[in-house]
Length: 312
Image (cartoon, rainbow, N blue to C red; front, side, top):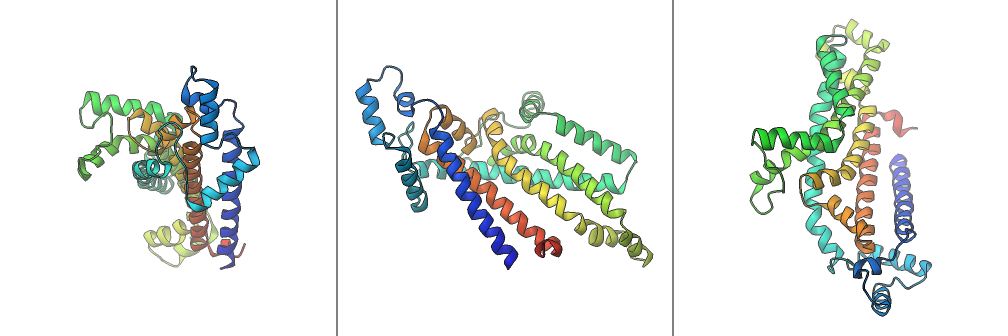
């Protein structure tokens, strides 16, 4: 329980500091959002009225207090560029990004962990060499380049998958059909790094003395690997998986732009370019809260996987 309470306190402090940095970074960036929104030919009177309407004429400490009041009450404000409620905009876009991130994480785990385990259990074999070559290609290939290659091969050349869109409003199977290539493009690089981590962690555990003891007792090899080796190698694997889930949330913007999918990442890029304070800070806050939540869950799973973490 004390371990959980410490993690909760750390999570709350991290949220406070992260949201404060979001507020300051957006407002200290050069440029007037009212001027950007209205265009170069807007009159000074119209710019001043717009700044007053959205509270941009208030001193920075007042804006900060208003920001926290609105955040705690769930009032995310009105988008400067879209003239729509920020909550409604996010509510319409977040399912696409969440689905893409979770599917990409599924690709990461389903490909990365078995590939790394195979390489560790077949060390210095052809399977180990092939797995490490795949990992090297995954690490060295940028996400946007892999996305373009997947589009060329599977969309233009073979015609198996659609090029753009998310299949909005056309059923579950159509949505999954549109999701395959973005999930592969986003999850493959993480899968390569997870595979390398899994291989290293398993090799380190398999060389321990207690593994020889387990084999000397006559336990079947599958029990030795699954119960003794894999569980002890699970903590570094969980650390890397949790880290990459946060990266997948951020990297979703690239996949959404390349594949023309709706989502929070594409919205965030547009909002930052338009200096849309309410939408930008709300979207960045959503991403930060997602990453912090994943890290908190990962830390909790550490304690379940290794009781020594709870006592640390």
